[in-house]
Image (cartoon, rainbow, N blue to C red; front, side, top):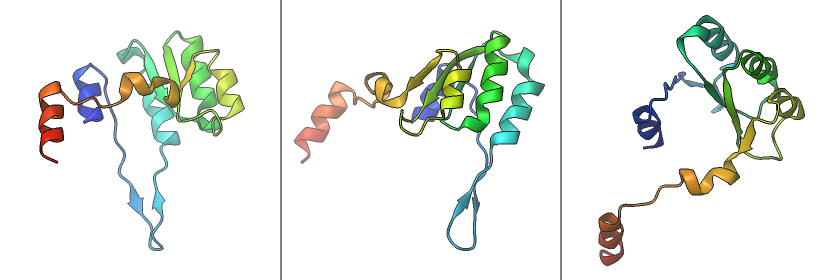
Length: 119
């Protein structure tokens, strides 16, 4: 549902397949893919929103900031966010906890009343 709402708002979302490992783990390296795509398509968009807490993206974030293309870095939480990433974002970083009110799902009033009465 969030994916559709973001796309409807004009965001271009890029999904990467997840590889399931034999021992049950999941592998999904997006670092190089994301950096390559940003570099190759830099002139195709106005602003970038990067969702990560990983310091591996600090150079990319700095590049976007210097080129006037970084809107914001959204990190899952303050505890796991890389200090290098925070520094590279130049103050354009926010955390998911601070966005809860804006991002949480709120059912339509008719849907909410139906849900309450069906219990």
